[in-house]
View 1 (cartoon, rainbow, N blue to C red):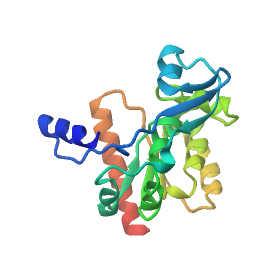
View 2: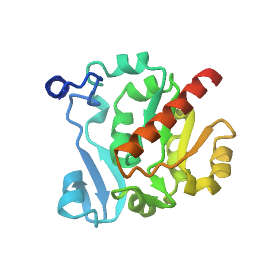
View 3: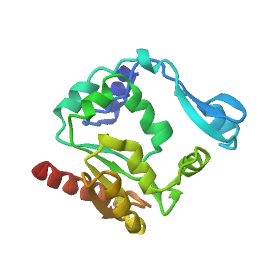
View 4: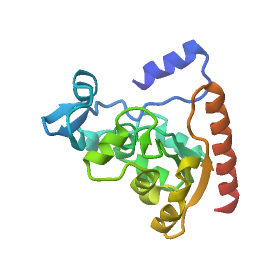
Length: 205
């Protein structure tokens, strides 16, 4: 997979390093009230209707980070976890042996994919609810626990800042921003704000 990804980057003139988490097979299985389902069956065929109780990243314990993953993390001054689904997009990556350990040595920021109790897109909010958690920026931050140094949440969730800071015993930096990205200009703007925030933390931490 890393070889194919590299070929695509070369063909399309992408100079940045784009790496998969692993070259091993790590299928995501969803624990539901209809049994253990392959993620694509749950997401596409069943339209995320089954009630979720958990996830299995099959064979992840024997997976290895793809070539270059750990070295790129090691070289990074700053790592940003983008506002994707923490359960099925981010958790599989963090579950690959060696990746979490490498990230804990870095300044890591996370952008909340939950705004005002709703997912920007996809079933993330539904998953939180079905697993007994409030779908909120607070739940997202707490899920990243001792991994993150800074957290970016939408301006609509300003009321949650006090609870987030308390949950981290004050050991968290918070940025409020307009995190709803409707177009390319919004994505560029938010990326710039996150990088500025990250650079401030590099100087402070």
